[in-house]
Length: 117
Image (cartoon, rainbow, N blue to C red):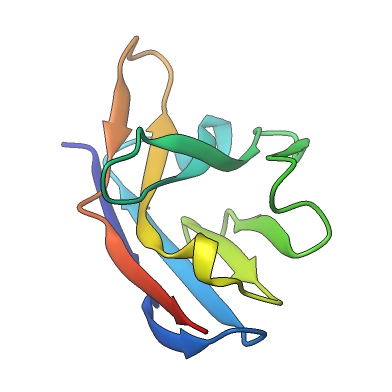
């Protein structure tokens, strides 16, 4: 079974940093496309960052220059390094995987990030 477990969320002041981790299992991680999404109260879930199996990056305009995504295939883990956090970054952050040969997206349980002003 595909399983994604996020960790690293918490409360941080504006301007601070957090590093989120997503531990993956149940598929061949090295060929999976991984991403981080977030959902704030009353808003739709949105893509924050994605990384392909060849480490091509895709970052939302709102986080470019502040967030970075990376993966460690040896550890089956994808990371989201969040710097210069803003209150508008407050959301539940979800790990996402698209793992061949499955046609479906898989989601973790989410981890709360709260940025105080």
